Length: 327
Image (spheres, rainbow, N blue to C red):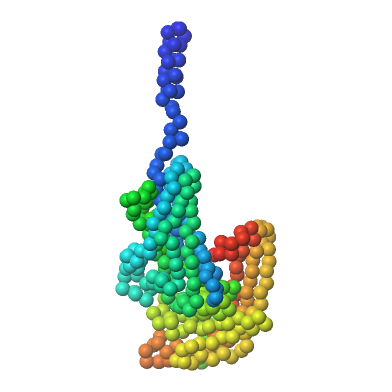
């Protein structure tokens, strides 16, 4: 190769190297502020809050600063409740089925700060939401809708994507006995048709009433029924291993036929040694009730019998209870 060609190649390489500055050290995107509350299939972000009768429970909702570099400013981010987005969501998902609508959580059940501070050198902060859920009726689907507010005097930019500047938090309080039970061992039959194939639901969801009480819907009734509130069955767990069933609606003609009990067992996972399986089994479930609204002209009596099993999977490496349970 001629000397002039080598010199030319050297100059080209030198030019390319000079052009390749450390652009990876510069911001490639934008420092946008957003909630970390990804939507699930229901169109909301489910959060789980330990129910306590006598005191508040704090849930920590993350806020993030996006970008390829670390946030270099002290930010005071304004937040507020956002009812408008919840109204739009309800209509788009459920149209005229207002009994399916999410309801905005009443102010008496929570408190939020007006601002959340994100320190320079940090890309995340935790917004403390205090919940006091005594007396809440979980027959409704409660959502706490939040938004990040514009502030011309502040240094932050709000993420322009609506699913990042908003947080639609569906509040799911839990106690030691609430959750989704397996219903495969619970039979529902119509009175007088006991020899026919029973109705079996694979899952029966239960809801918190207080620290030791849950409710579920009688028989094969679930959230899809417009009149579901009329068919609540309450189950109270006592320290001696008994379960007391009751109903508040006299029109159900609810009657318990056996004394139910429960057991708690635990087992470590064979593959993931840090994972604890906790099983709550309700035995001797046997009750009768009348469905008086399914058919307008006829009241139908049902008999329910069998057992229910709840499994909780707990990551023993995580100290926070609401985070350790694999929902």
